Amino acid sequence: MKTIDGIDFKGKRAIMRVDFNVPLNREFQITDDSRMRAAIPSIKKILEDGGAVIVMSHLGRPKEGPEDKYSLRHLRDHLSKLLGIDVRFADDCIGDLTHQKALNLKPGEVLLLENLRFYREETKGDEAFAQKLAQLADVYVNDAFGTAHRAHASTTIIAKFFPRNKAFGYLMANELSSIDKVIRDVKRPYTAIIGGAKVSTKIQILENLLDKVDDLIIGGGMMFTFIKARGGSIGGSLVEDDFLEKAGEIIEKAKAKGVKLHIPTDAIIADTFANDVNTREVKADAIPEGWLGLDIGPGSREAFSKVIEQSKTVLWNGPMGVFEMENFAKGTKVVAEALVKATKNGAFTLIGGGDSVAAINQLGLAEQVSYVSTGGGALLEYMEGKVLPGVQAINE
Ligand code: AMP
Image 1 (cartoon, rainbow, N blue to C red):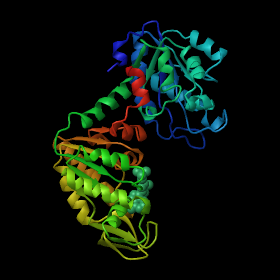
Image 2: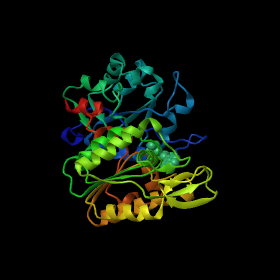
Image 3: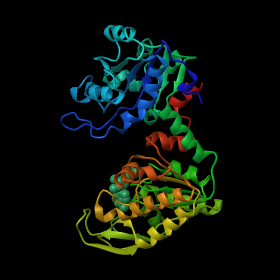
Image 4: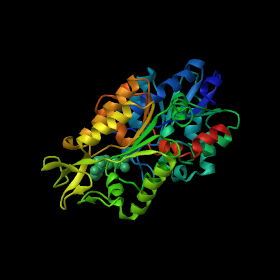
């Protein structure tokens, strides 16, 4: 893998794509800086080599040009603090003034550029825009795994202007090698746990996983499409009727391939979609009309834990229930705890995708699993076997 370790940055200017898409409150204070902290080791390596770094990112989803609430200016002081130096700022990510600021950088200095998405050319992957960014530096570094599945100007197109001077940052390299472990050197049994709201968004990954895993656990809202496909009664639970056939096919394919498919046998149901309401524990395929399944039940929790704890490789994406509400968080919590146990038993455990990452952080267990990926969409696309444009751009 072409990482920044293979480059001596002495006297060079590196332009680095990072993912500083951090949450800000109304006072523009950063409420979770983990994405910023994650990029610090790569920036420091370049500075310590005697190079200068131009940092570029997007923040939020600005619609038409610059908007103060999405300005990266709000991140400048915090980045200075994290690096222990006075970070410079450019009001625009391209243009003469920015170019001048970049040329004036001395070794050991950092220039933070304004939000890339103030230009529509960024998400369009515009080549002329990418070239203007490229003109700011001698080396291109990509350390933004979360956007690697997008062929944007700063994540992919820019790389062609650095045919020999481009590399992955440490965060990106670490993401790729951790995920490669699950894809390539799989220790068995290999279990995947897929939950979350919808089957439709996860069909591709489910089909792909059937060729790889020994056990496939299904939870979350999507379980009801599977249960209905098997003829069960699901009351008013979340269901995607357009995907009943697809779910049936997955059940059949799992059988044909010898994959053990674990669909919850019981569920916690509620009479309204809210936390403090009447709840009951019932068989997952016998949910009365007027009730909704919002979490997996105790029997499923126990069965799933057993499978997970006996696995040697575990991939988890998507919560088991509506974990944002305390009364329906137990399934997700028990699965998280089973991953921790599996890790202690020597398994490689990987968590990815926004909601399961939020869940493991909320439970304070993120340090006790093997790897928590920063990528949601990027992780799933990579697991599906797709070549990520941002990765290919560095490799080719
Ligand atoms: P996803 O983005 O597809 O991973 O879905 C995550 C969301 O699925 C979370 O916000 C959960 O609250 C939701 N979810 C999980 N289980 C259920 C369920 N049984 N019914 C409705 N929503 C659910």
